Image 1 (cartoon, rainbow, N blue to C red):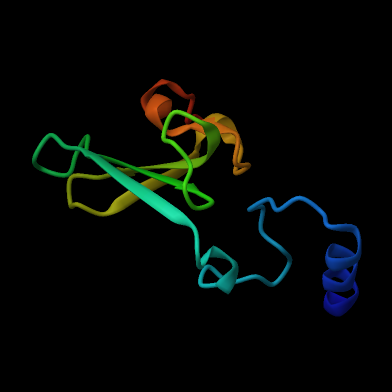
Image 2 (cartoon, rainbow, N blue to C red):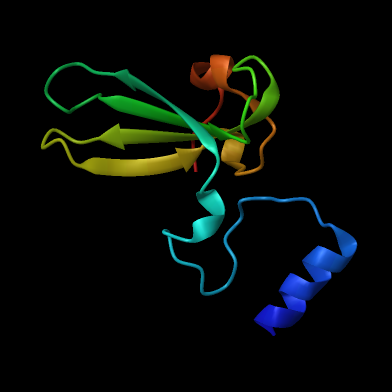
Length: 106
């Protein structure tokens, strides 16, 4: 079944979205070759600490609507407590420069 999916992708040139494929692990090789920008906002003790990771295909301006954005928040023990997508989507349609203006609620 997996080979049939891959063959269909090659045959029909489907657009690349980062939504997970059944059985896919977080270390899947399709993320290799993407550019990532990292941004941190911290109160100093973990509580209220925020990390944004913006990911795009190479050579995209941070002002282009070509980014996928994740927001990580931390608890008082400096552990990641939530990971959310900008406006609930993992598609490459966001502006990295506007990362703090998107909705990250579940």
